[in-house]
Image 1 (tube, rainbow, N blue to C red):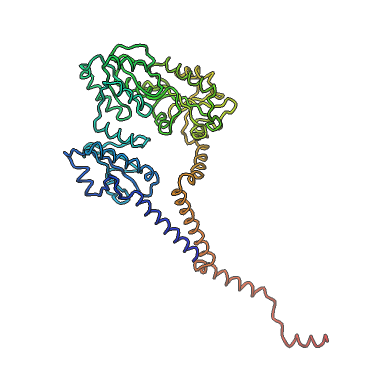
Image 2 (cartoon, rainbow, N blue to C red):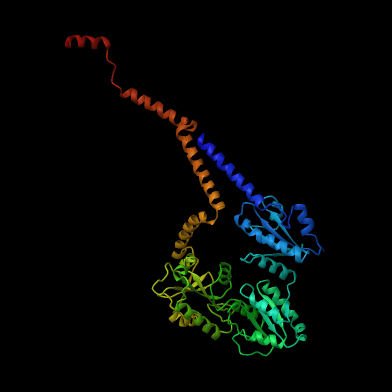
Amino acid sequence: MNVLCKILVALFFNFLLYIGSIYSLGDFKDHITDLQQKDFEEKVLRKNENITWFIYFFAPWCGYCQRIYPEVVKTAEYFILNNNNIQIGKVDCTIQTEICKKEKIQAYPTFKLFLNESYVKKYEKPKRTVKDFIRFIESSKNPQYTHITSQQQLDEIKAEIRNFPTFALLLQSNDDISKYEEFLLTLSNHIGNEISIITVTDPKLVSNIIKLSISESCDPPCIMVLASNNESPTLPFNHSMEFIINFINQYKFPSVFFPRQDEFIDSLHSGNLLVIMGIDVKLLGQNYPEYLKEFEKLAVQIRKENVLPVKFSNSAHPRGIIFLIVDFFTYSSLFREFGINNLNYTQGYSIVISDGLKYYYNLPKDITIKHLYNTIKLILKEDPQISKKKAYSIFSINSIRRFFYDLNVAISSVFYKSWYHAILVTIVICVILSGCTLCTCLLLFGDIAESYFLQDEHIQNIELQDNMPAPIDEEKSENETKKER
């Protein structure tokens, strides 16, 4: 009975948490419309309506949904002040199941932009801040380009190039813009909201932009990618759309950088060759050792020598090279997948060269900066000296090691994620253990056990009776006692 009471208390506590989570996404004045089935059909899917809807699909029990919700609220507040034609809505998928089924919502949170019933665009970037949401909504509603006419506009772009890389088309005059308008719109449709597109015709501004590149000069029309410390060249505009997209995918990343998690994921899926240096950030502290400087110099050298995206590893399309510096222990699971189990403390770092997430290039010993230049050259030439291995494989020893490593990390880290996760996991474990204990007790000591033990008890009684000595006659025993006396 005590065990049953504890289970009921735990379930009641879990129910209270669930109700609390619902009210944490509650209906206070947050300028976000809580959409029901009828509202969604009439307001969001209605045609010929000059309203754009940005919809937040969530589940109340989703911890990440709760953490991201303030960013959604700020986005709604921004458009209330700046653009009343854009509205923010939310759909609780645990209640509005028909809506979420129709929209094929499979993960929480999910964000979708609805211009009308025929134009729906899903937000797929890993980074989810108010700036990213606003940028996505505005660029999707007006998927075009911006014409830069002042130094102030250019300075604003330069201040944000870490978060929002920019593709620049440098032209001679305003009349040229109309000639390239079709190209710009096509490019915008290809790259979506990942990259800003600008046009510049003012000679002074064109000159200032060229100074940011590794090219000495360029006669418009020219193209360039503005990003943080990216060492991008300025090239003549005489290339195909495919080349330009590959060019953007290479130079939207800096030459060398310490990526945030979303940037690291983006680079892994960019299709570029990745040179990843793993270091011990805690041990490093505020120091900036010589090998990091050498790594940066080498990155700039290789990027300058390979101005154009290059073909490698039987790639059908040209790709670029990206140099990353990450904390080895933060991404230790990934390094294990690429065959590196421990950080090389002797040299202070470990380097892996990967082809996205699927393949990596293996050497007999750890790659050093001294040999890195020649190693990359051999890879680009597809030299057989550098073996290419598959990272993800069921039969790979690295995959098996990583599976158990990730399992260990997942179990140990869940209690450090948030109090909400810790309580939920604890409750689930307690319910399971309590259920098992209850069943065991009933089986051994309760009514369930009776039917099993009654037969055994009957058999034991028969065996005891058979083995007992024969009864002694009372009179005989009294006579024997008298004789003895």
